[in-house]
Image 1: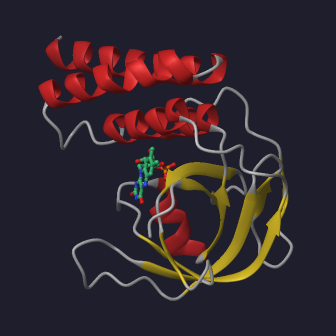
Image 2: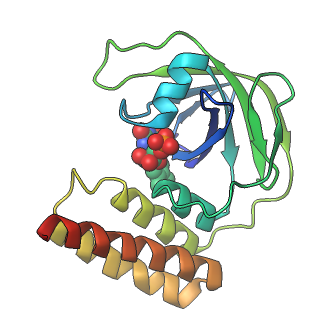
Length: 191
Ligand SMILES: Cc1cc2nc3c(=O)[nH]c(=O)nc-3n(C[C@H](O)[C@H](O)[C@H](O)COP(=O)(O)O)c2cc1C
């Protein structure tokens, strides 16, 4: 099963990179199969350090902001307990991991990550259609280069209805942020 969450890795200067990632979860989170695009900071950091922390969270505003690289202030973190890494202070659960050396033999680069330590901060809030809609919208926005504009517009219209009907302010803000990213990106492509 793929679980969408947030992955922290360390930059060369020691700063913390936060990125949405959807690893394949194996053996009840004992192993994560991470497939970051070679253009991503997560890929570069994992290749260099082979370490990171995966977070299960319901904070879709942070997820949306991280997807478009617009986090206004770095989220609070504390040092991981078993690896050189950073744990988001606000999350539901976290998984500190170490990777086997990068496998680039397949279609996408693969890091097989072994979880060394896990912890829990708070309950997952529960299923909410607006939050799922924000996740879907963030995935669309992060795949602009792969998808047709008309398809994206149709999908966004369907997702917007779930956000309006079932979300609160953070979900509405996250969705509006993603919509404005689309407008800016497409405007720049036309200019
Ligand atoms: C829910 C979600 C899951 C994602 N999963 C992946 C993934 O598994 N691999 C990947 O390369 N990008 C994934 N992305 C896209 C990255 O988050 C996006 O390219 C991001 O800009 C990478 O950040 P980074 O350059 O800081 O690593 C996902 C995006 C979202 C919204």
